[in-house]
Amino acid sequence: MEVYFYLEGIEKLVAKLKGTENIYVGIRPYGFHAGNMSTLVAYPILLCREMVRQGKKPKFNIYLFINDWEQEKLDGINPHIYPFNVLPRHTTWQFIPDPIDKRFSIVDFWEPVIVNYMNFIKYYYPSVSLKTIRNSAMKTHPSMKKYLLKTLKNPKILLKIFQEYGKKPTLDKAIYASAVCPKCKAARGNTNVLHKDYIVHSCSYCHRESAGDYESFEYWFYHKPLALPRIEAYKIDLNITCCDKYKENDHLIKQQLTKAYGMITPLPKILYTPVILGMNNKIMGKSKGNAINVGLDKLVQLLEDNPKAETIRISRLI
Ligand SMILES: [Zn+2]
Image (spheres, rainbow, N blue to C red):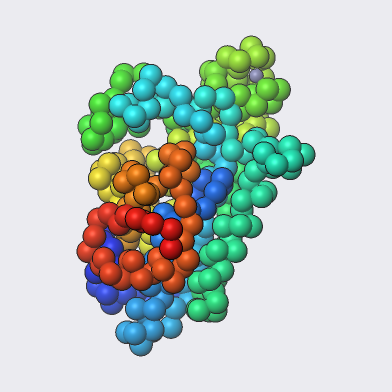
């Protein structure tokens, strides 16, 4: 697995690209701030711009993975100290209504907003294609089904890897996937896999017992193993992601997950983008109360002014 960092890594990376690679970016579907803009819009544009500079035509296939199977709110003993022992507090983004009008879904609102921002890439480089894929839409894909069932059946495989390679302490008990209760939509309870792909779920919220085929449920799926079916299903060549993941040893964990799950598809190259800090000097995040938007031109300028920086602070509204 080859890793590249920031703007200064793009030149070396582009020298190895043909222009037709499959690129993976991902986001949780509830907002879009300067940190998202850096990884999902500015960096792909800077990558394409360097392709042109090196005399190659960018015709990348960009896959935008929308993580609607992620927990809406984190729960666990202490998600900050034990990030590998987390659970959804209640449900996943898939079941969260739009706060403006609850008849609508929050994912249906944010997905086109995110795609609109990403269409800036196609404005400058029209031969690039952009495809949006929700986790829930991948449910019946054989790769998703295979990795999700493996994770439901044997969370200990992951736990062992996190204990060995993660940079944070890990408790002995953890699960990394759960069915969603069909009645109350809670992703909390016990999910058992019987006879290959028959699911029995008992909900710890409403205490309903549900049973059925894999396909008859929706799921919560922890984000780290979730990368594997995406990479396998879409033959991903390059992942563009924020470098805070690198600091968590995410690349080493993915290598170990690949081995443990027996994935044959090679892991993609990774281009790490800088961490964008908000005005309070903390990592910009939708849940941290410091998310702001800036103009794409101003953001690109900031990235160009700091080609080797691990963190870039948005010090004022621009
Ligand atoms: Zn329930």
